[in-house]
Length: 154
Image (cartoon, rainbow, N blue to C red; front, top):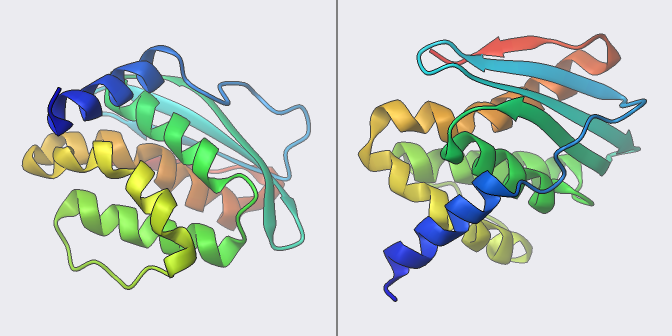
């Protein structure tokens, strides 16, 4: 099995069996994300404990890439500080857009590696929005708090 096949298997597994796919009863933050070009929709729920992500989950529907990205994101961000979450988003966004990658702290190297299966979307610009939708919703949730927000990727 080559690396591309392994990455495809990871995306399909997370797409078909997403982790942390649930609403939170009393999140401290949440946001809705929508990609009108393909119809992907996601709601990201976040519970903070101080400056740390105590819980993060999502609900929504969309393609395997958007679901897998949201699933991997929730697994990776649980327990992270807000600064670590921001560093992971910046690094991930750079990888999927082909942009200049910022220095990622060594402590987050394993987490960045777990996101590697999604980086193939940089070859398909229309799919970048699928891979980043949940991440943009996570950031919008942090900005909006318990009142919620909606973010569109176009």
